[in-house]
Amino acid sequence: MELALSLGDSSKPFSFLDKTPKLSGKDLGFCMAVGGGRSSRSPEKEEEPTPGRDGGERRGSSDPPVQLDLLPFSPVPRRQTSQLRFPWLTDNIGTEPGSGGLDVNRLPVLAGADDAEDGAALSSPNSAVSSFPMDFGIGNGSSRGKRDMEAETERASSRASDDDENGLTRKKLRLSKEQSAFLEESFKEHNTLNPKQKLALAKQLNLRPRQVEVWFQNRRARTKLKQTEVDCEYLKRCCETLTEENRRLQKELQELRALKTSQPFYMQLPATTLTMCPSCERVATTTTTSATTKTVNTGNHGTANGVALPLNRPKLHPFSALKPAQGSQTQAQAHQAAS
DNA sequence: CGTTTATGACCCCTTACTTCA
DNA sequence: CCTGAAGTAAGGGGTCATAAA
Image (cartoon, rainbow, N blue to C red; front, side, top):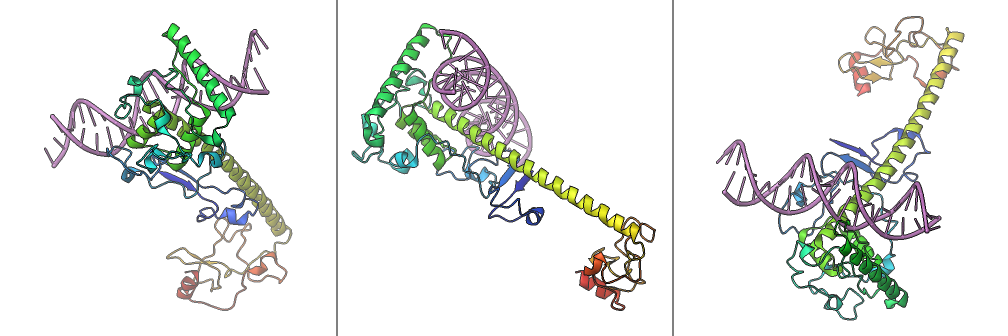
C-alpha cells in the first residue's frame, strides 16, 4: 500500500491544487509518502557486509521524491562540523594530524574496541570513559568547548559514581554536544548505518555500538515524528481547501437552481449540448442530434428539474459557453469528438 | 525443495532520566 | 528550591528478511 502526496517539483496528483492557487507548491513544498512496511528506510547503503534485512535491494522504492529537511535543529552548524571526518569515508581514520578532523589517536581507545559489537565489554554506559566528550578540534579548540567538555566529564563521572552506589539505577548518559553534533552530521549522510559504519562511529565517538544504534533509531523516530506533524498540517490545509471548494460549489449550485426556477424557459438547453457515447459513455461537448445520443443530465433527465432538455436558449444564458446546436452529427462523429 | 529455526536489524512504545523555564 | 514540560537515551517486544539446518 502506498499513498503519495506530492507538491513542488514532482508531478501533480491532485488537480485541485491547480485550481486553488492559494495552496501552491510554494506554500507547501514537500512530498509525502506513506508506504507499507519499511519503505521509509534509506535506499542508499554504502556497503552491506552482512546482507541482512536492511539490504538496499529490499528497501522500498517509495521514498518521497522530496523530503522535508528535518534537520533544522541540528545543534551544530555545518561550518563547524564540516571538518569532521566520517569513518566510512576514509580508511585512514585519525591519520591526518592537523587536519582538523577527529584524531582518534588522541582518544583513549580501548582494547577490543575494534571487534566488539557488544560494547558492554568496553565500558559501562555511564562510565566517564564511555561518555567522555573527546576533543574534536572544533572551533579552534576553544577554551569554552574544553570547559564544557570538562564539566560534562565531571557530570558523567559523578553520575557514574552515583550509579555505582545504586546498581538498580537506570543507566543513562547524556551525549556530549560534540558527540551529538557528529552523530547528527553522520545522520545527514546516512539515516541508517551498516554494521561497519556503526562500529566506526562508535569507535570514533568512543561510544558503544549499541549507543550509536539507539541514537540513530531515536533520531529516525524524531524525523518521522516531525514529518508526521508536517503531513498532518498539510492534510489539514488540504481539507480546509476542499471544504472551501465544496462550499463554493454548493453555493454555485444553489444559484444555478435559483436561476433555473426563476427563468425556467431560458434554462432549457438544447438537447444536443452535451452528449454521451452509449458505448464508451464518454461525454462529448459537440453537438449531435437528439436521436443518436443521450444527454448527460443524470438525475432529472426530461423532468421539470432537468437542465439539458431545451431546444433554444438566449445568448445571455449562463451556459453560453456551451456550443449551440450546429446541425446533425453521427454517433461515430460524437464518439470521435469525445475521444 | 519446502519447512523450521536462529539471527540480525529495525520499528514502535514505553520508561527513566536530564534540562530548563 | 520545587515543579511540570520537553527532550532524549535506553529497554523491551514485535516484525520481517535472510541464512543455515
